[in-house]
Length: 512
Ligand SMILES: NC(=O)C1=CN([C@@H]2O[C@H](COP(=O)(O)OP(=O)(O)OC[C@H]3O[C@@H](n4cnc5c(N)ncnc54)[C@H](OP(=O)(O)O)[C@@H]3O)[C@@H](O)[C@H]2O)[C@@H](O)CC1
Ligand SMILES: Nc1ncnc2c1ncn2[C@@H]1O[C@H](COP(=O)(O)OP(=O)(O)O)[C@@H](O)[C@H]1O
Ligand SMILES: [K+]
Image 1 (cartoon, protein in one colour):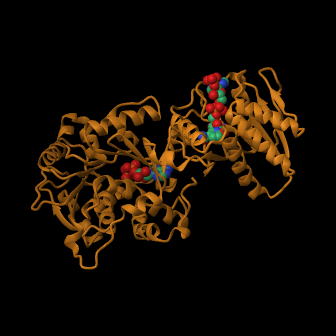
Image 2 (spheres, rainbow, N blue to C red):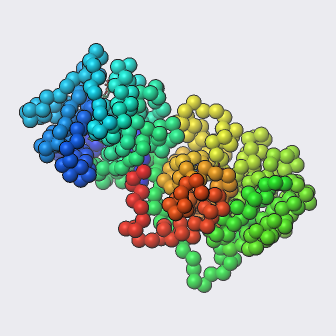
Image 3 (cartoon, rainbow, N blue to C red):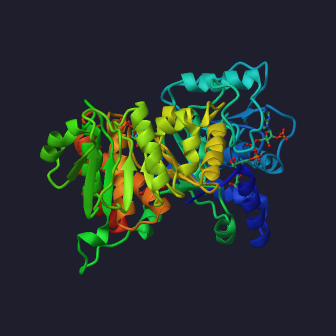
């Protein structure tokens, strides 16, 4: 599903109005009706105080129109207009007139007003700012936002939590609504998925307000949200008359004394993802444990006992996954550098292999085109340098990926894949996966998909989704704390089955 910028949303809005020959307030009424239906379906007339805080723009207009619909259906409401500017929007004013006609008298909050009391049992509707926020809220508006956050009431944000800008991190982190639930119009917003801004969005859901399908279709978005719908078409079925050679020979290179488990995790995940053959290349000290723990894996060893020092390949693998537990010894860096020069096919590069690249930037030019780099935030920083905020990070990372013609995977709660100027935002995974070795499993999964013939970008998008899904399935059975990297691998098969199962039995991923 496409993630639009604010400008693209305004364009879609305008296009819809022109094509469908409607006025803008009709769109606002559609939005308010969807908000009302969502609330009404859950409250079913329950008498609870609903306090609507409405700005003076179109987000405020949505809130005012919602207030009218709630009032018409017998709900107990109070409307507070947050009077932060003289420049009231046309549709805000229209809806303000309409509620007055319905004998609803809003309370106007100005700079010097006392703030209204909010009980923890109230429902707060946050319609102060929408996607039009373009500067820091005034101090007194910030105080109101803090007052709402401190109330412990359920806060339902309209479109986006007020105080969150669409294209940067907030100016003041205290001046942002901490939403219990966000009902967002038509398209997901990138800020919902970034670590600095996603924290204001507890749960979110999209409401279809009827923006025209044609404009949604023809707009090129810089980011795409990846759910099951995007994943299913990428799946490559296993063929009846196939054999192990059909599904590729993967090589997993890594490990050092005390860190052979990382190779075990990656190799095992690679096999479980369906790679036809897997050979691991480790220092001598890893031979026995690897042969015992994963019998399906073939093992080659370095001449060095404790570290990788010279990588000699007796055959040309279809794909190499490298870096887990490998360390950054000089001899290892040299061996990796030589391998980069030798290999033409894309590689999956992880962990210390990324740290070696960061220390030896000259090696970057030797990375085979369309290789997949899987840094966690610290490794990313070593590669691309420090960033100012999440948006700056994405821009720097995009530039890096383009310059070196690689697929860059920024791992996190919502892993983002960057390639050729475009971003793919993953929707699976959970905090249980913040545990040692889960990245090694991801490397194994992606390597296994490339081995089977998935095009590198698709292998990455599919692999990141499958990895998170496997973690979600395990966590749903055993809880977050019990997730271990090896347990994620045990659920890879269930993950495939979930992707392939009919849509009605899988979770709706247009919510988060
Ligand atoms: N297509 C859709 O999805 C539809 C969207 N709809 C709704 O419209 C919402 C967007 O509405 P919006 O453009 O009127 O902007 P909104 O966020 O209400 O802000 C109001 C104005 O405040 C100003 N301003 C900015 N920052 C400020 C600050 N710190 N302190 C003070 N003032 C500040 C700034 O104006 P400026 O002063 O810069 O000229 C801004 O324009 C959207 O989120 C959704 O809820 C639906 O109605 C129907 C279809
Ligand atoms: N809070 C979280 N929510 C979802 N996924 C997470 C979370 N924390 C970590 N992960 C996932 O777990 C993996 C961790 O990788 P990494 O940090 O490289 O671990 P390791 O180096 O221990 O193998 C990544 O795929 C990341 O996306
Ligand atoms: K809002």
